[in-house]
Image (cartoon, rainbow, N blue to C red; front, side, top):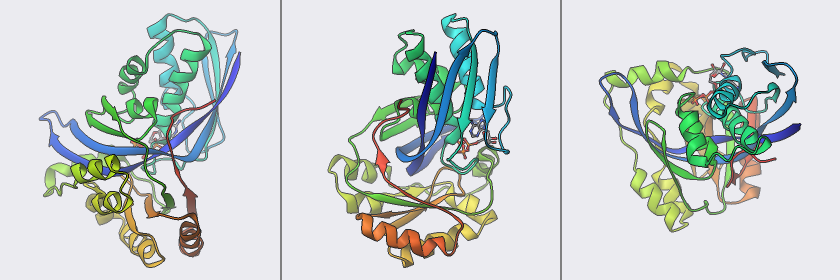
Amino acid sequence: MKRIVRAPAKLNLGLDVPYTHPDGTIEWRMVMTSIGLSDHVQIETNSSSRIRIISDSGFLPNDKRNLAYQAAHLFLRHTGVKSGLTITIEKSIPVAAGLGGGSSDAAAVLRTLNEMFATGLSLAEMAKLGLAIDSDVPYCVYGRTALVSGRGEIVTPLKSLPKMWFILAKPNVSVSTPRIVRRLRHIQIDHPDIDGLLAGIMQSDYHQIVASMGNTLEPITTANHPQIQVIKERLLKYGADGSQMSGSGPTVFGVCHSESRARRVYNSISGFCHEVYVTQPINHGASL
Ligand code: ATP
């Protein structure tokens, strides 16, 4: 048996941290959406009893530290399915960029194995399994625009976004999410207008959505990587209606209402930042 699936990246239109638990774990309140930029994950059964990871990225571990490996391992243990698996990951989503690539690969593995072996797990069951891997995996299991809260396990799907385009620009640095999150204890937290964002999505009001975007982690990552602020300003100058960092960064995205404007912004920022993408929201997670 063999399947090939697309595992889409995510963007945080809103990211708030209402509370940090005494043990250091985080309560999130995030509005997330999936986008067209995707990895390809191929899963093939084999007659061994091992999970083998192959990837085209020199930055990724090919052992149990790979989130796709962890997803396969958890799935086999939870369902009792016995099979060897070869998982080949073709990366297009930049690694450690705030775009949830590892979590999306893991969610794609859970959903695909559930389909391949007809194990009948619900999305909620797979999301619960995925939470043990990373707080973004439950969102990626659903994969559509959603409010994500708690430690990442409460995923409330929302209406699809109105027509909009994203221009992504990734500075040439990688960011460790745990390191950024640890800094939260030491700063005055700025809370973005998540309720305004939810109202904008409910009303399909593009301008309200853009006006309500915000990311609590942005000042922390920007303090170490000031080029994030420079890219944000350039995206606005070149014509984006709004711009912000995704997740713990460092990727910055600009938002435009029309494709023609988005392509102009893309062309202008391409001369300034070498890793740039133009894409749209999609309303599904991993797809065959
Ligand atoms: P986060 O979900 O924590 O915001 P991110 O989007 O910034 O993460 P990822 O690309 O998911 O970043 O990578 C986070 C870490 O996970 C990296 O250190 C990377 O080596 C590791 N990792 C393990 N498996 C994968 C995978 N399949 N794809 C990408 N990264 C992976």
